[in-house]
Image (cartoon, rainbow, N blue to C red; front, side, top):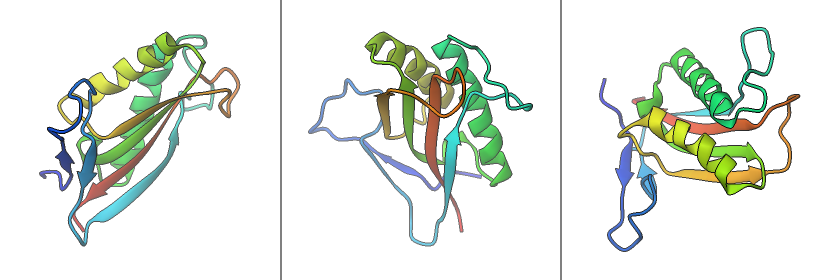
Length: 135
C-alpha cells in the first residue's frame, strides 16, 4: 500500500540536511504515536553495550516491529527524534547514520539530540517516531 506521508523539501533552506524539513498527511489519516524505541532484546536486556551504531540498529529493528504491530512500516513514519546519550557529535553521527540508512529514500523530518542519560542500564540510543496510515 502506498504511503500517505508527503515529505516537503524547501528550496529556501540548505540541502545539507539528510531529511525533509516537513511532512504532511491528509485529513482522515490514522496517526500512530510510538513510544521511544530502545535497544532492548526480547528479554529486556540492553544490547550492544558501548556501541552507538549497534544500539541504533537494535532500536530501528524494534521500531519496525512496533510499526508492524500497528499496521505500518518505516515508509509510513512522519517524523523521528533520535536521542543519543552523549555530548560528542561523533557519537550522535554514528547513531544517526544507522537510522538514516534504515529509512533509505524515505528521508523523514528528524531531530538528532544529545542527552545526558536514557532510561535503561547502558542505554545510549532511543528513537521516537510518529507514523501515519490511511484511515
